[in-house]
Amino acid sequence: MDHVVYVDHKAQELEKLLEGAKTCIIRGAAGRKLPYGRVNPGDILYFIRNNGEGLVRARGQVSDVFNSEKMDKDESIQLVEDNHAKLQLSPQQLKKWAGKRYLVLIDVDEVQVVEAFPIDKSGYSNMDDWLPVEDIDSVKT
Image (cartoon, rainbow, N blue to C red; front, side, top):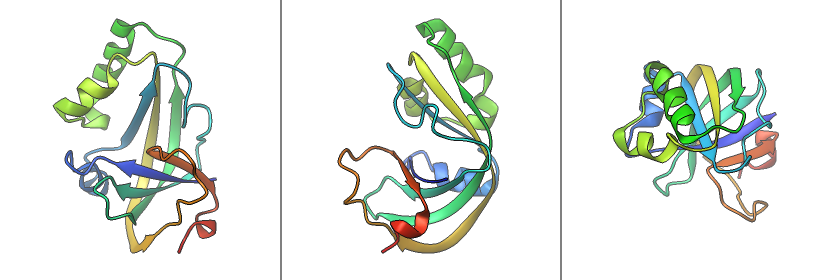
């Protein structure tokens, strides 16, 4: 399964992934929303910066996934802190994710630059920062 993942441009997430300083992507919410339960080891993630350019710039392979059970605020903060070394979150990102009831931690390896390409997002009604696309070729433009 392929996924298109928007990464934080201001926090230089893509650069950190390519350097190998960051090896884990985090997503979270008050409920179980994407990508909760929808990502598996072996899946391919295609990365786009959230700066409006709309180009896939890199890809990586999922090596491990952790879907949390419902947590209270303190448990959530602790989980984020315990994984800080591989998450490499900016203070703004820390504030955004720590404290969410449900967290998904996705370990990524083999992150590499790809020839930049745009995608067709018209099939996705709610523009989220995570798009499960099945096959990347189906959304390449």
